[in-house]
Image (tube, rainbow, N blue to C red):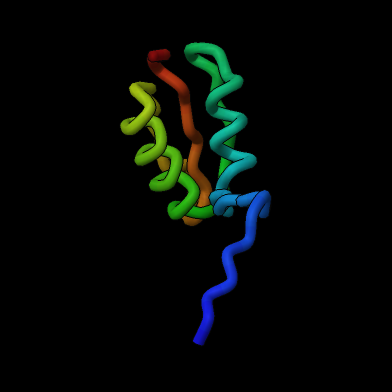
Length: 74
């Protein structure tokens, strides 16, 4: 079997299904917040923030409703 090498194929990469929330946190100022309805979103934001050097906190408002704050920039 011969392997065909392809050149100049664009790598689209893998984007997070939470990318819109990650972009929002990145653009937010210190003390700004927003509400989400899924804890997996909160967990993804906390993980991303930790890796990037941000600090975010959250509070449970109601069943399946969470407020996320940006507390510290890089």
